[in-house]
Image (cartoon, rainbow, N blue to C red; front, side, top):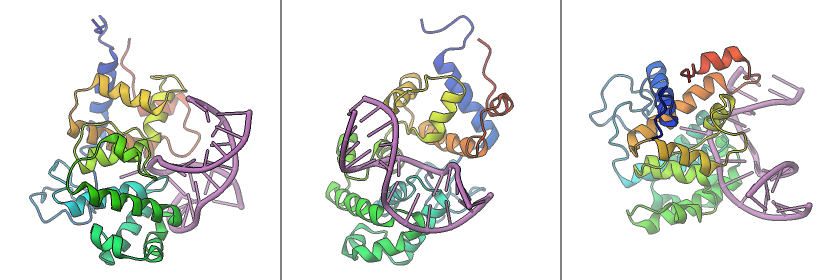
Length: 244
DNA sequence: AACCAGGACGTGA
DNA sequence: TCACGTCATGGT
């Protein structure tokens, strides 16, 4: 039905992109965690918190909270900077919710300074910490997450996908840019429309969703960060569209 | 030395 | 709804 005789269905194109990314870059091992080598992930390639092909994380509430903090800290910032903030929080023993909520606001904002927006993010993190504590181990709904000030669509989906293994697709700036530049979606597509595209065309597999988003980021950093990134040559290197 | 990073919120049309 | 300014730090 939605299968064209040339095989270039939307689902087919998305699968091609996924496979091409996976061939090029390999499994990404997201979400990075500070301490994830105490397990069976002694498989090769475990660098600075990434755990390729090991989908067993997070393994406790402490790691769930770390992912939530990371999701907020990396908003409009590089992971390098967000990670510095996380390391500071960890050194100060503040990556457990209880300790975090006992700390002074100024202590938090000082620790997260490298991630930028220290005042905003301090408030956002506190909101998330109170929310996470009240969850008491339960998985939140997307609506409840979005009601937390500081948690927008991408952060909510990141938390659901990586901290709770809910197969919800994360749409980030690179994903949107990639699809628009390759003319796979109209320019004014909304977050929800792009999210729906993936979720309607792909099987709801949290592992695939985790890898796909991470791969989009890896690919985007290589091809679509510094302008100009619009040339046909770049688009060709970026992704060879299957012939219709 | 501008420009950009794994966005979200508040405001005014 | 939607476009725009604001929030802050570090690397290129």
